[in-house]
Image (cartoon, rainbow, N blue to C red):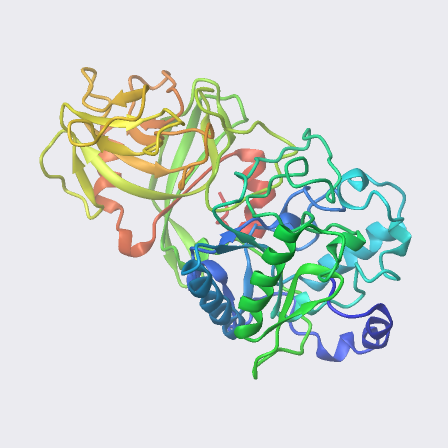
Length: 470
């Protein structure tokens, strides 16, 4: 997290104003890492409350890694090299708006230590600057610095964090501390402890080897490390950046989407909602056609696993079998139906008597449409798609929980409703004429997306996600 020694940071503080660029828009040289290498995993901690401050930082409107184009391309080369060795990368933080750096500074001077037991059990937060864990001016704000870790075959599966999760010392043994999906690196991320120093002699041989593997791979592509934090690297290539930036981090996908379906309900538990189509005109979305009614899960909505992660301290979280439709931002996948062909530009899957959607989270085909007669079954639970009630005569796969995490919910579709007041088990359903219109309108070349939220959450996120007025 830190970018330079505290004393040097004090000297640079006086220079922040003349080198500041616009706080309103993203410069062209700053790119979303997903657009360069989507295989690099992301766990952007400062977009949630799972960080040393215990709250999402100012400026993190979406859980996205942004870097300068050169740094992102260099990181993609690191990923390619590590993949040949059976390893990979997971980033925790990349570009950081300067307002977020200021937010860290405020936290360090105000009372309260909500996450001390996990992130800094042996340090007083007033000493963050003196010990080199927090910077007053951060290289993260210049676009070439990032925090990351190493994934691999020896890593324990990543846990799903919630505010109720027990706090375990970040320097505890690997099996005991928070499982972030990485191999053993000696400590967790953002661990303000001497054991997090890159060359600490107190860590075990496995962690030391993993740190060296990560460091070697990063150095070969022009990244330099930081002695106080094994996870911290700065790109030092010829086009390394020097200007501090403060534009907010927003959901990347809306920048490239030209078709949007917005579904809103009155509240988290309402089962009836309204859908509206939008098309992009220049930099804004405009309504396309009339709105139409939909029904959602019999238990309402809950935060799902989609393209943007928001702080989930308010509102339920989607789980397998909970009867809730997912809230969030989602891609749209394959269209399906009973007919052998369909009037749609979407990829289309004709359903047969053996087509199933697997909802057994222990299966490697969890949350997938499969041909049950052609694949060796490793599941004990699934939904047969060729139904007697014709609800799936026309449907569209909503890419919720893709790639799938166990028990986070599966087999979420747009499909035909049973009746205007009959909720679903977790899908979003509508009149046959309305889903037929979606079939003919949606075009994968326009990167269509679904935004599905309670009305209050939609308004709360509208500015940070660049959503249209609704």
